[in-house]
Each structure stands twice: as structure tokens, then as C-alpha cells.
Length: 178
Length: 333
Image (cartoon, rainbow over all chains, first blue to last red; front, top):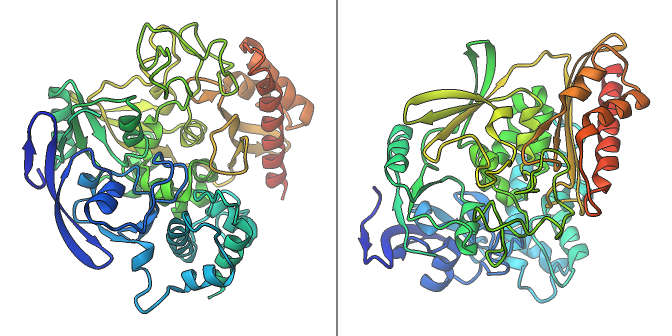
């Protein structure tokens, strides 16, 4: 059994550690707390946003142990010891290249979905670098040619209600070229 | 959501013991479906038994009882399954089915076993204010005469007309996969085709598993290198949506004749639908448009439709025909 369980019958708390943007936090969370709520409500890490809270919009995306991951469908207790990198923690020295690219290409309007878009793009480019195919990849065994159709498919888990998709596409295209 | 106990067993055996001794316990793996159900009130367990850290995440070629198999650990994430070199080169239908499901983020989270055990996305099942025999046995089926676009056309019952949402399960049905299950009485193997069931008068049971049964792996019999396979999915938008209809197919030709063809359909039934009648009709003949259409129609002889689902008959026929013609074209190249 991990951590210490304290139950009252109505709630049950467990001690967990999370490394968020390089800082280690120890906290006690109710077992039902999502990772998103632990970050936002308990640790005041508000870069990941709550959109649909059902895994359909992608605005809560972070890098979890190095991969892009939703935080709304993850229970905090199940990720005890995890390393979380949010959009706010991406650039070690100023802005991350993907963030700079979003600025250059106006990859947003209201900005609410942007931290999730940016984390998703960073994770997605890493998947491409590892040779992961996608639904639109013609030859599953060949190297990925990250054309616009590939970018659209791979970013389909992130919605933008302002419809800034042309800017997002241009930003990811440029970031992919390095 | 009610108060939840959380356990993280050290072994699969311990996990099975925990769930079998707690009637209100559920396994938690990736959580992408179950955590949503906790929020919606569709699931209300009192104990979650977290199996996500059990070392069930290898993909390896091993010798099975009936020859070589590719064994996929239950915790292999959907993204890693689709990216595995052997899956991509030898089982394109499995890679493509996996990639057709969900989004990049969810494929990093969802596990192989969890994908198979995900529950229907029927709007009534997910809405606790409506009647649903699957969610609450005996309350009725709101989808009968309700929003029917995603309903089944094969094997439905008066109690439930929903479809199974997994793409991966359809791909696996077409490669004769086997599911390795650990239960209170030890390990056993179930054909993927026998894992999911038709609703009958017990739609609350999606599968033939007991609550404490834990899937530990999925095994794919290694295929001949001259077998081609693929997966086609039709949906309301280009990406990140559930299937209206999907087709998984494998094809091995002997000259101009079909040596072996395997066809599984998604979006048409409460389980992946293996179209064995169509397979039998095509085996030994050529892959021509008219022949495929006739074979599909033979399989669909027992289909029942209403205004909401009538479109699926033509969609299954056309998608199957397109898919097999494409595979036959690959063989010729």
C-alpha cells in the first residue's frame, strides 16, 4: 500500500508526492481527486486548464513522466511520484521553441486552450521523433513525413473554440522544422 | 462520487484476491474510461484496485501451445502497441485499429486490456437520468426508439441495442487473438471472439469475465508474411470520434483465389462481429466487387434496422468492399 490512508467514511486521504515543473510537492489528497484538481486547486499550478473535464477537449494536457497526457481523467493517487511538466514549466530559459512558434503564428485567440495545445505539440513532436505512426500514415513502417494532414490528425485531441486552427497548424509546422 | 478506498497490489495474484474479496471493488488501469464513469455516476465502486503499475507491459514473441504468438502485456499503452515494430509490420490491422481510436493523449494513457473492457458510449448509458438496462438492469432501454445513429444492426435484443466502442477489439477479432485471464482459479485463455457477448436479457454484462477476472495479456498468433491486413473506420468527423461502422480485414491470396480471408466489423453489434458467413462465401473465389457485396449481404441477412440505423447496411457493404479490394490490390503489387 502506498502512502498513508486516513478514512472518515466520507472521505479517504492519501499522501502523495508530485514533481511539478521541477519542484517536489508532498500533499494529502482525497482518493477521488483528479490530477488536474490536485494541480490547480491544491498546488495553485493553474497553467493546465479545465475545459470539458471528460477527456474530450485536451485543454488539461501536460507532460506526465515525459509524455503528453490528460490530467482530468487521471486520479492523483494513481500518479504518486510522477513528474509533471506544464506549459509554464516548459522553457528552461525563457520560452520553449513551440511557445515561440505559437506567438509568431498567432496560434490562439482567447488563449484558454493554449497551454494544452503547447504541451500536446511538444509531446506529439517527441512521438514523431520516436517514429510513432498515426491514423493517416500511409506506410506504417516508413519514417514519418509530418505533413499538414499528419499534424491535424495528431493534434485532434486538442480543441480550440476560437477556431485558431490555421495558426496552430502553422505554429506546429514551424516548430517541427526546428 | 462516493468515498473510495485505493489499493495498489504488488502482484496480479494479489490484485485478483483483493477484487474477489471486495464486492464493490473495481480494477483501475489507465483510467480514461473509469474515471469518467466515476464523475458521471455510471460507476460507483468503493475500492479501486490499481493494476497500472503491475509489470504487464512487454510485447514479445513467445512459443504458445499452438505455435508462435506475439504476447502483448495488458498494461501496454495503446500508443506503444501501435508503434511496436512487429505490430506495424506483421499486424497492420491491429496497429491501424489502435490508431483509429481516441486521441494522442488518451492513447498514451489507455491500456490494451482497458481498451477491450471500455464500456459503450451510448448517450443513455452515460446519462444517469435516463432508463438503461445496461447501467441499471430492469429500467428499460431509452435507445429503442430514441437517438439511434450509433445503435446495433446485428445481434441486438429487446433489452439493449448498443454497440461496443473499441476499435482495437475489432482489429484483434480479425487476427484470431486470445485473451489471457487470471481468475480466482488460476490462468485461462479465452478467444477474443468469446470475450465480448451479445446483450440478450443480460445487457449489464459486456463480457464473459467475472468481476475479479484480470486480463494479463493478449496473444496474437503469428501470421504468414504473405497475409495483408488493414482497418477502415467511418465516423462523423475525420478524427477522435467513435465508429459508425468499421471493418478489420486480413487477406491471403493463392494466385487469383482467396486462400484465407478474415473480416470483423465494428459499430454494428454489442461485440466485434466476425463475419464468418461472408468469409466462407469469399474463400476460394476472387476478390471482385460483386462477389464481396454478395458475401456481405449474406452476412447481413439477419440485420435489423430502423430509421436511425438503416444507413449502416450500405455503409458496411461499401466499406468492406473498399477494404478488400484495397488489400487485393496490395497483394498484386
